[in-house]
Structures are given as structure tokens and as C-alpha cells.
Length: 183
Image (cartoon, rainbow, N blue to C red):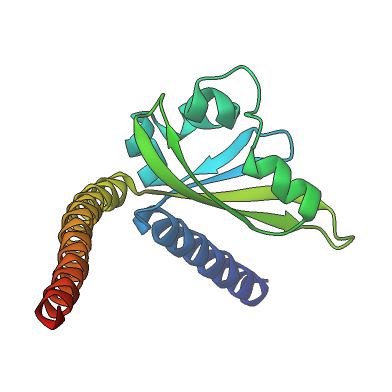
């Protein structure tokens, strides 16, 4: 009897070890990860999610994502969760979330059952606020350069136009001088 229990016990221990390893991997990822049911209820979150929302995982589980992320009573109009359910394909969006004061890049991945129906959605969100700040600074810098170049171009074109006009007047005067010399 003991010989039969050992393989089962070893299998259980191996399975527990695998589950613990997957949990450690899930929690070591620095992106904000949550798993949702079809109705937007949160089923599981990683450590980064808990840290971002300053709550224990069990405080997030069972709540609607739109309540926690957007501070809304219903899903937002362009909800990637809904899009993933409709298309049964991953959806990627970038947006600024005023409630969190964060720029986020969110990718949602539908999990399908054997029949091809969406049963869960994995949300992976990255805080891209710093990247957006750098992009804005680069845009401001580029806009300043463009403004400078446009001003320079107007001044240069104005001068060029004046030079062309002067050359035309000089040419007319030279022709007039030549005409007067002949007379």
C-alpha cells in the first residue's frame, strides 16, 4: 500500500512545486497583470498590480476592472476587454488614465475554450508615463526647430525676393544706360 502512495505523494509534491514556480514567475513580472472573466471581474492579479493599486490581491479579486482602473461604474466606451471578446484576438491600446494619472499601454489576450469561445481575458499593462514625457519633450523640441526653420525660410525667401527684384531693376537700369549711351 505504501508503494502506491509514494508515487501519488511525489506527484502531488511535484505539482505543488510547479504551481509555486508559476506563481513566482507571475509575481516577478513587473508589468501590471490581471486575469478577468468575461464580465470584467478580476480573477487573479500579480504583485505589480497589487503594488500599483496599493491593495492585497484578495481585495482586487471579484471586483470589476473598470471600478479599479477607471473609477467608473461601467466599462469605458473603447474597452479593449470587450474588443477582445468580440474579435477573439489580442487587442493593444495606449491611453492616459486620469484616475491613476498614468499613461498605460495595455494588451489583452483572450483565453478560449475548446469550442473557441472566450472564457477569460489576460490584461497586461505597462506604465509608459515616462516614455510619454520624453516623447512630449521631443515633440516640443521638434516643434521649436520647425518654427525656427519656418521663420528662417521666410526671412531668407524675403531677402531672396528682394535680391531678385534688385537684380531685375539693375538689369533695367543697365539697359536704360546702354540705350542712353547709344543716343
